[in-house]
Length: 424
Image (cartoon, rainbow, N blue to C red; front, side, top):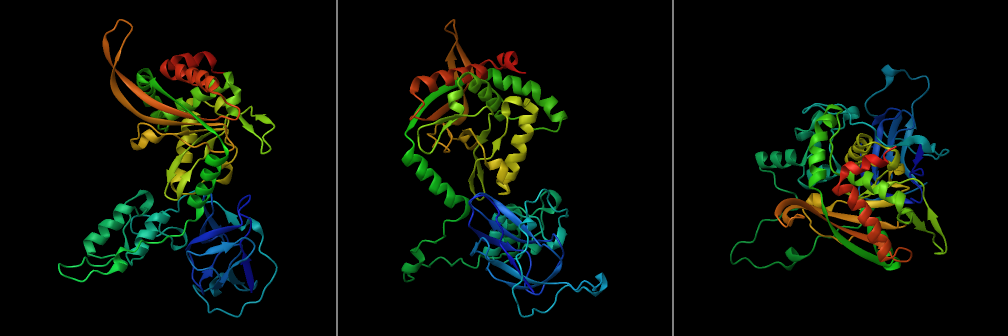
């Protein structure tokens, strides 16, 4: 018998939450088969089996916290002489004895969605669905296999679950009927639902408090006329579509930002912990805040100054999908030098962002509005106006510096063809 101990799954991570067990005690498992999904303070991680065998014990219940280097589950390895024909779907559990640790390389992040169709299950019997959808299924007393998925490759979506519930008139197991007139009021019905703060949301809470408490923020707002930028994007979209890339405004924001940073490199610097050294980074790793199911994630596009608009668009698309699924690679979350929060995608006009420490600055982009503006001759024109708000580390960035930097960035966005003069 062997104990599988939770290995190191990220720098500084000492514990994680067990989100979902893919197996049960007594199940037969194959090498590299997904065993359990755990949530760290950064992302959702899938842990696979180091070898074939039979699961004999699950040490940590679903929803509980597992410690790094502590036993996660126990299994019995298959006899070397046992052939494939002798393997059964499940075996009885046997007494457990400890053996040496399982190698740490048994942890890997998934790189593809298991193939399936709307009625079939994916690899190892798993139906493709996000953790939020699986939680909704559990809350209504269902199993994921009961719901027909309408998403890509049979993925079960939230809408599929709600339609299934409505069709079968299934009520949540935790719901209670509304009191009728004259019925005695029960104070317990007014009690709040308590949920522990864990994973990404927990680390976000700690980091935002630390950032707001230790970094003096300087905020600077501006309006940018993106009429010409929108027109340019419309002209380029067919070519991007032909390359299989969705061209949003984000690649333009990032490319213009990298060009502006070349003229004001202090915005791409970071102050050390002692507060007595500035570290200037030659590479622009621009982060983008993504509102994922597990909380706020800020993956970053590496080396934006060397990438084309199509290459940036490809990275933006990849990171957005991974973040919304909660499956961002640890490397994509590290090394950011400056960040963009596109709150306007959700409808916000203004925002005052908090710096993603140890970075020096972050910009919040509001939604674009068509507004009347005067031209040079005094005539009123219909223009696309976008509001932005910068937050800078006031320990080493003053108002004049961030204003000049913003003017350079604004110039590239208002006259996007000027970026051609600086592209390598």
